[in-house]
Length: 222
Image (cartoon, rainbow, N blue to C red; front, side, top):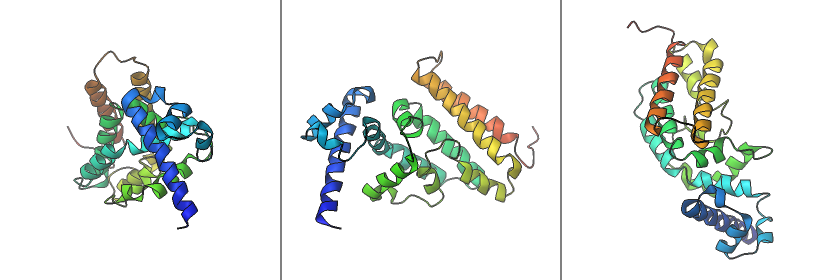
């Protein structure tokens, strides 16, 4: 790695870490290019040598703030005996963390970032490769997939190969569960819930469970 590359990487991380600090102390809505530059000790113009716009800074900083979620979902999924169990455990962790950090998860999975957001995820892990240590292979497609219409599909396809769910319903199940989550997240972000986050999580997981049950190859008799 050349000295120039090392310097660019160091500067890139300075700005991301400054953004993380602002998010933790003041909230995502308070992040501005000027604040990040001041905290990092550079002028605003310098930031544009590394990031096109403030949304990119927020995205990368939010990726760093997913650390607890990544560790939790990795540990929980490891306890699943089938891919369908792993899928449900992944949703449990995703709902639990996203509903308590809605702005962070919105920045990573919903916010408009312009073209090629997946390349931004790859860029993040190039800068922070240690974040992928101990991550199982089956989870990496989820981590590298920003699109909510695709997330989780890899696990559902494996569940179909196991004979647990109807393969012809994988796409529709994946889309319905993601739309359900997005709807609940919208309510949370806009303060439109008339019940607690715990209840929101319970309802979301209950509805996802009902959707999954309708795709089982062998219905469970009640």
